[in-house]
Length: 172
Image 1 (cartoon, one colour):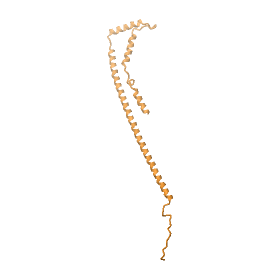
Image 2 (cartoon, one colour):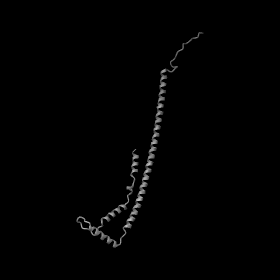
Image 3 (cartoon, helix red, strand yellow):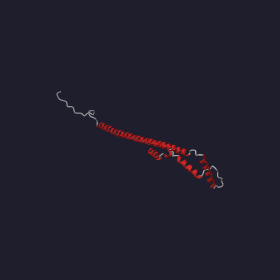
Image 4 (cartoon, helix red, strand yellow):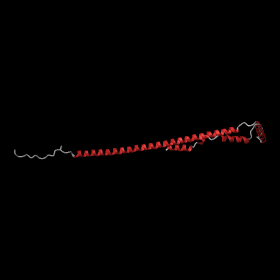
């Protein structure tokens, strides 16, 4: 028994990883790497989209504030025009009151007689002249005074171009 027994070296299958398992592990690592890259790309795209939405919201808010400022300016101009119209109307009423003071009775009688004489000279296609009718020139002058006395309202003076421009900016 003194002889040494030499056993052959055996390659046991459990000592090393099979090459197919190594390929599976490599494919899993590649899959994880690709999923990570796609996930980072999606996260970056989402953050860019959120930033763009925030910028757009800021632009909309700025335009709304600008539009509100224009509306307030238009309201102020309309109020100013209305106050000017009220002042002009008050002045016109004062002027009309000054013109319409009661005249002396003698002047009224002379004016009526002159009106009757003037009405008698004109032919009215068979209609008799009335004694108390006014001459046409005086009636026309009174109508012109009425037109001058009534100033334009604030609605007539309002600048519709600013409102149209504002509405056009909202349609964009």
